[in-house]
Image (tube, rainbow, N blue to C red; front, top):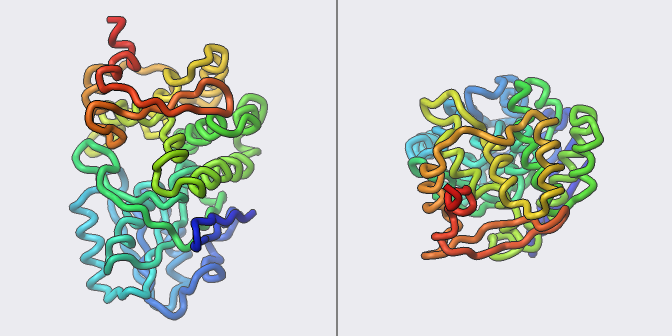
Length: 343
């Protein structure tokens, strides 16, 4: 299956096909330029090696697994390695891994020599469904997620569902939260597939439909000035929960990104029946529907969300299945989203 992202005069292909990682050379030039393959220590080595073996002049660079690699320190180390490899403006960075590798690699490509070519090869459910397309790249600054970054579109995205076979079950399910999000905001049939279908048997359809939702939104609004805000559904509260209870740094026990987004979506669904249906879907998938977390700490991180603008912040609500609404609310309204006004 193939989708093509159209952004003004630019476009790029999104290839969804089992085994496509071994055919990267068919979609971009690997023979006549240096290729910097970026991966992390949690990605099976065979995936990056499959890419590297197709390059005439390539090198492999591995960063530590986890969110801490989306830091200024690691970013600087990667740029230093690119410079030492002799990368020029016509050369290519290929990211092979999950969302951390894609975000870090994309930002390195965006900023090295003011921008070089970038190809994304996502290997997790979360990155295949969501983060690998759309051009958002970036780093965290302390506990604030994705606050440093750039919009930098890849030249191609290759999604090989075979790479999901090595994911632990919890990581596989974690990424499905973003597909549930896509169904809730724009694709009722996708949401209903979670209610009636088998996610393992239907995974390619789930990925494809999720990408269709994001592609359509990004083509309308590349830089998040309007429609693209819909993709933040669940993230304002979710990022706050992730900052407090997420698996990051030395914190090895806690919640993953998709699990936090799942929790962040529920309070923003206005229709009670749909909220009940969503809880049932999340339970079926094995995603959390409640968690013990210090809400006041979550509130503190939400108040530093990058979607804030002075005394207001934009939140995304779902009034009914397949539709959404952006509300600019005062920062003073954030406690109510967490139920703190009821305490």
